[in-house]
Length: 133
Image (cartoon, rainbow, N blue to C red; front, side, top):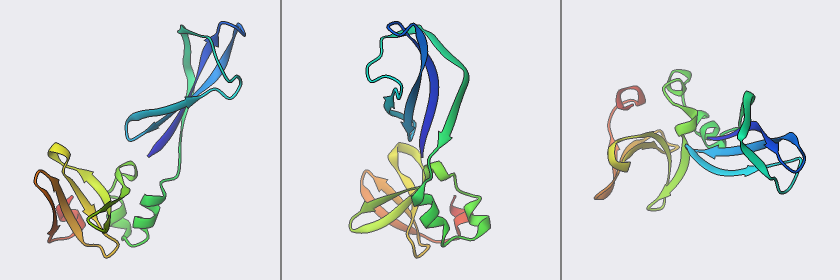
């Protein structure tokens, strides 16, 4: 899930606080922007986080998968964990991380899979989503 965190940083050239937008996806910093000024000269010891806010961008992959799920199944998932992935010509939706980079996934036919990376395998699992997750 993509999040946008907004904080204020003191700009030494403007001698004023300006807004800095920080983009985070899947726990990683993927970018930042400063709408008020293209290039800033920040005083990194003067970051104002008292009034910061986080906005979440819509996760269309979660929305697509949710269209085939029951309400009780949707409640089992964390929207920020759901994303589309293509493996061996199959379109799967990542649902949950397991150990060592393995994960539980689902296709649009509601078939559930365990995907392992060493060795690489896509194994269809039996059982309902509630049992597997």
